[in-house]
Image (tube, rainbow, N blue to C red; front, side, top):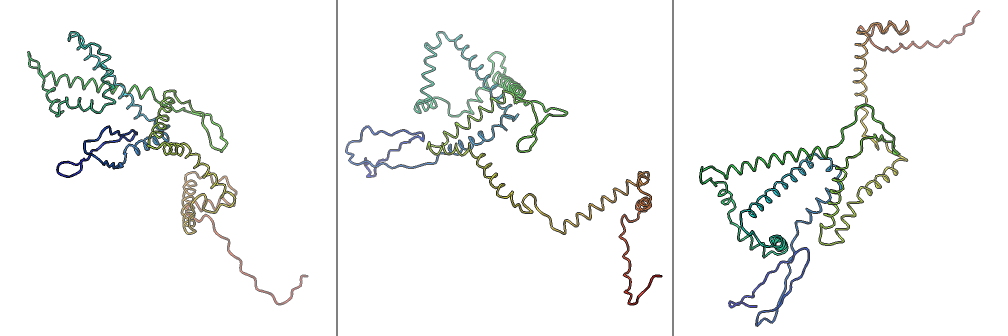
Length: 345
């Protein structure tokens, strides 16, 4: 439609990323043409779901043994329990003090919950009833006073509720850490066996069932997040398949690489090589260190020199007092060539 000032009228509609349709029931009078234009926007929840799903899927073993996560679970459950107790107490007080309360209260609560969950208009109406300045409402509650003794009951109740909440959350966190705790490491000799690949496998205590259950929940949560991460089912399925098979693919590629090099491995295939100068320098330094240690040992325990042969004892004594450890034999002078003849009688 065209407005009185001659410009076309634009109607915007939002289509959820989860899907749906937009229905035009009727057109204004005098409208002969309608033009629809679509604008694509990026959904920031897609990378968040994918990253969190991969972290849950690949790191569930680390997360199920993480004490910080255990404390967070216990603290959250304790905080939720306190909120439920407060809501129950408020509900009981209202039922006791207000005659008749609300007829069919359970039915009304269920209908209101569904309406708020699936109707944006209902949420906007409830939001309009709430005070716009939340900080002003908080200060108004904190400044409540007793009409008789003029006591700051707002601050007293708030501080008391905060202390109870912190204490309960701390207790829940500590109890959760103890509940999900890993078994202590065995002391002394640990039985073990040699695996098919040659590595040592220690016989450790089995995994506690709370950690086993928590790990399965984290792993299944990662699978769910990856399946629902994108708005295209095929892409989500491929992402889940890659996440599940990546370790196996990397292992196969590593095995193929090792088999390709195991027949003719190069000198530096398993460890970096050092230069010849470095090798000689290290040999000289460590040899000198070993000689000094041997000299100190002979000076501290002279009886050790009596355990060698007689011809070696003298050389050891000279070495312990500062002499050389080894002396190359002198080369005998080459005898001159005799040109004459000799006869043995």
